[in-house]
Image (cartoon, rainbow, N blue to C red; front, side, top):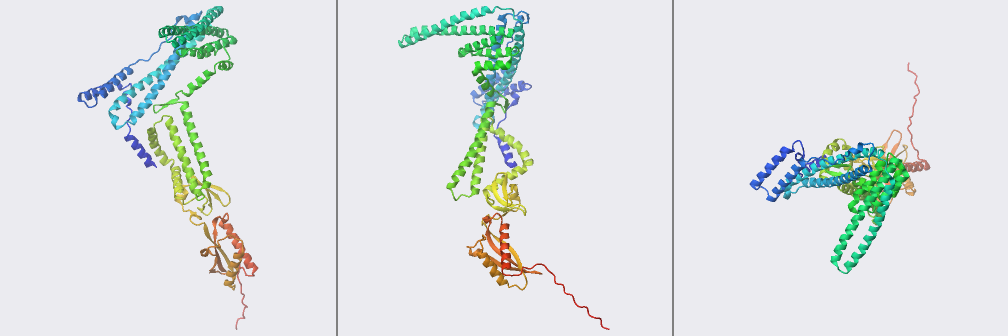
Length: 608
């Protein structure tokens, strides 16, 4: 077994190229990149590779150098008025808009990071499994991998900067809300009323323009269609602008309610914000982050549990979006492959599905086995077990592949684990191999009566990959490791022939006619209802003269029985001995027992 894993390890080592880590190692890649550039220039001069490949190598080398010198930074929110005791509403709205942009850029960076990770996974497989015909492109793939690796690190740094900036701005906003200068809320209501009137007018205009466009298209007046289309787009843009203004007016009301800790007013504004957000087109989807921003700002002022239920009921879609976002979150990166909760769930479901299909296969095989009366229980068990493990193994490999894990890395891990398997799991592997041998060799089958030792006798009830179950004649189930059947002598009473010759010893007293004893016992046996083989000429019962002991003449009844006629041959032996005893007693034949005769001689007078 260890030898096989070692071969796998060697095979994978010879046929895989490795990632050149020095290309993206900041401590040593500057000098290394200069060496590579010199090497490329030399190849160009000597025309060692196709010119296009060499040009691409220089191009990606240049990109890598630029990426290596890139400084990661983001815009920071700077407003000195935030430190004042009287903060203006305009400053609060300006900070919230900046926070919206931060959330949007952070999401874009996260998405880009996922895409870069996918490119890294693809390039890693490409490098490690590169074909001979693509050997000239190996450096290009290495440079691309190094570029994406550096960009991935830069994106992770950027994400951290965004998180720190958001955290800082939330703290500033919480402080600023408590320091808002007194504001007349009626101005917001007045502005909302005016906006609502304008929105209704523009909406009517948009509908009218849609009808006019349809008519002009039908009349094929394309010049008029173009004019109406521009006006239509302009009206839609104005409609979206007014919607955004409306949203921020409601945000002002929500901010005031947070300052005043008025939960009812906050929920009313929150619902109107979400209703308006749902109307925005895809170009303005970044304003959806207002929902999360308000939740963060209202945590300190309101009951978060009650607020969560209230806000969730107003926007069920957000819950779905949060769940979807969580399922696609990168938990960790293994072998340059991003592992997400969704990918883990998919893999687990595939494994469970494989086990379920394997069990269905077993049930189906058992169901149709009635149509094959000639098939043995052992063959049925082997077929079902091998099929089950094969199905589970295939689905397991598919599940591993669905995670995006390269199987060449699995072979490397298997090679490393072979040492542990060789020492720590030697017994398990031995039993596993022994189980496979037993299944295919068929020297022990289900239903066979076997004897391993004087105390371990019974019927085989199940043969698995690691162990075999035996039900003893006392109805006790014993699980025996399969290696015991390979390493030790095993008596199989039913391997080729289920009949067995039973030896029943008995004795009669000296002076008894042996021929008469034989005749009587065999006659009684013939007329009895005991189960033994009667119809085979070669297996007829007989009585042999065995020995002349001190107090008895020893005889032995030899009779053939079928093992499965009763639970154990020993119980049948008891029945035959009882029959012999009753026969001897019936015909007054003496059954001897150990005894001694003492002869006393008369004392004689001594002669004078």
